[in-house]
Image 1 (tube, one colour):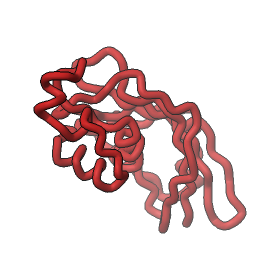
Image 2 (spheres, one colour):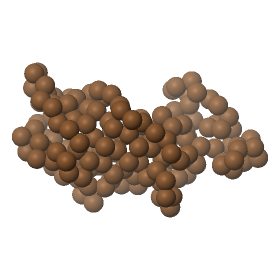
Image 3 (spheres, one colour):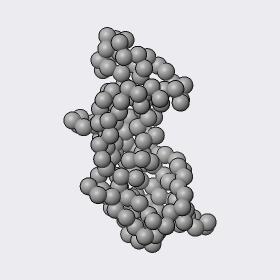
Image 4 (tube, helix red, strand yellow):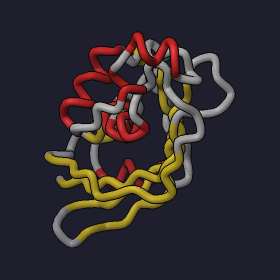
Length: 154
């Protein structure tokens, strides 16, 4: 589905309580998992040791870090919408983060999201709370369910 484009915050505010377009599928490769492991210093074998994971892991392959799916939220939101007047965006925080299903290497992820709340900020900005549901292709349970909060500035 094509991303929605908004001229400014006034136009975007009409999205409160509405679902955004579903984003593109992204394949989670071993290289991505290794890069995340190196960046976060979390090199537990279930993430980086492919041979051991095949033999010893209940998942029979390496799996992505739960926080890797959270780290992808900003990019996954870019697939759903843009606001032309935005000059800068910041990750403000998260609420109610859960990882119901592991993400095996080479899984495909995409996100369904809804604009839950929009709050005006005093410095030409808005704080937006998104309900995020990161699904794994072919799986019933999602990889991640979270409320993601972003601060956007014009």
